[in-house]
Length: 405
Ligand SMILES: Cc1cc2nc3c(=O)[nH]c(=O)nc-3n(C[C@H](O)[C@H](O)[C@H](O)COP(=O)(O)OP(=O)(O)OC[C@H]3O[C@@H](n4cnc5c(N)ncnc54)[C@H](O)[C@@H]3O)c2cc1C
Image 1 (cartoon, rainbow, N blue to C red):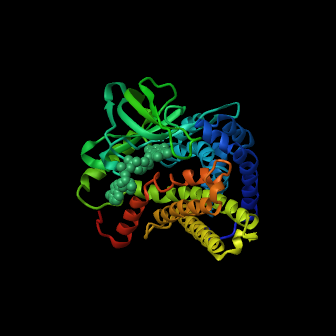
Image 2: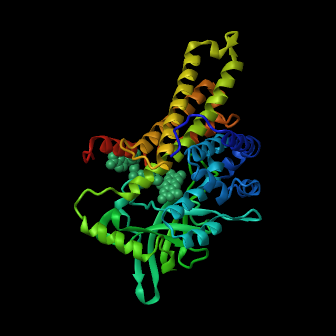
Image 3: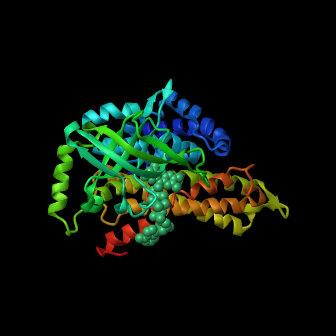
């Protein structure tokens, strides 16, 4: 087990500086254009693939870093560059983690490379869980997967929504109901291979922020996939369902909740990146913009806001790093520390970006300055990967042991 440390080692500092260079030189200059175009920034993803940032190797290296700081450090730097473009770059990694965490070795080896493609022909992947009537309430999911034993195939029907990279992905990971009687314990994840008949993109959403990231509905109409596309395999699923049936009614530890606790700090780190970016622009502006014959930071009303912004960002990063270290080192989340980090960091990003707009005055309200975009982007962090209300629910239930509703 790695000791918790608040200092990056030399190797991590090198990676951080390299990522920061890419974020500053490639991502940030392209941010306004792709935000306006509201399209996936394929050339930027390709550039990231060429230098090795968009690759399974890079993602896995950070993911398995025993200090736990690899992923939060990488997320913070990329999202400091621009949230929409960064999500286009890391969105595949989020789908790949589902396969890494639950797939067999063969599934990992077969599908993850196809999620990324290669630098000359980049591909993306999508993770599809949310549905029109199953957002926070995951248990009311309706997409159904039925096993056709004669053909050793699964037949999947349903509509997914809000899928990042949905419909444009080479590989989709789809969560579906395999046993409706078991609620969220009766769900399983499936790989939908490239060009599978029956999978199509529904509506593509026009969004408030992170507009360079593609978000769409995914329609599954009698999609047939081989038995080998069930993540983890049939034997493991049958065992899991039997266990769930035997313990019906009892409060058992939900494996999905543990996975969320481990993945939520990564979203917290994205929020820290956006917040830090807006804070830096605001600090610089406050030191150079003069009113009443002196820089506006000479007023405590402005300076104290900047002090609060910086304090919250540092506090958010510490919560994120702690939770990431706990996840990698298998520490139990006895106070839902993963949810805590995501809650605090995402609320911080929303607040700090709003303060940045205020500090830039009229300029902050225009697209001439990046804080307007950062403010719109920041609003996503309190919504996806569990809303702030759901994080509070998880924390309150975990610390109290009560079934708070
Ligand atoms: C840009 C974007 C990208 C996304 N990417 C993906 C993706 O790649 N894959 C995927 O599967 N999903 C994705 N999502 C979906 C996202 O995770 C959901 O939007 C989120 O879980 C909330 O669900 P909902 O939108 O249905 O809101 P609802 O669940 O309808 O919530 C609406 C409001 O009610 C509140 N609320 C609900 N229940 C409670 C409660 N019990 N107590 C208190 N308040 C409550 C919520 O906090 C929220 O404020 C994405 C969403 C967006 C916007």
